[in-house]
Length: 159
Image (cartoon, rainbow, N blue to C red):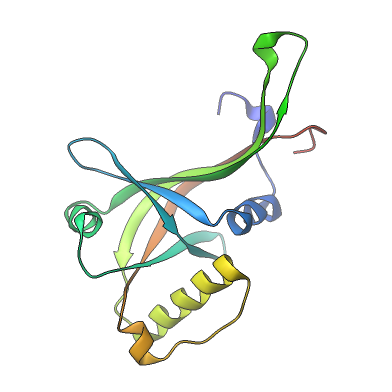
């Protein structure tokens, strides 16, 4: 990371960014990069970060993921503008998490339910349960993150 003074070292701060940002952008491999915004859920299993998604059972995204399950991701937010001593020092306050990993399709019904619960909690901050019938109406998959980093620019410079 070029601006290592902006690197986020706190897992608590990373989780705050993951919770506050309801949309994650997933980049897939095609003739050109194919990037889609998706709703997500997430969890840490010990130090392993996992994102959960659901979708229809067909479409370009699934075709690409079945051919090549390696993806990149980014999520973050933009805050207020900030100005420095010169015009070149102007910018925005921000927080972001980026990384890469591999998509895995989930077939176990209990893991599918857990994924949907995570999605609902991240998106709506509510604990709900799902029936087998509800789970069967969507395709559920996860991104097992291999590497990620967080970065932010804040006014108080407390990273």
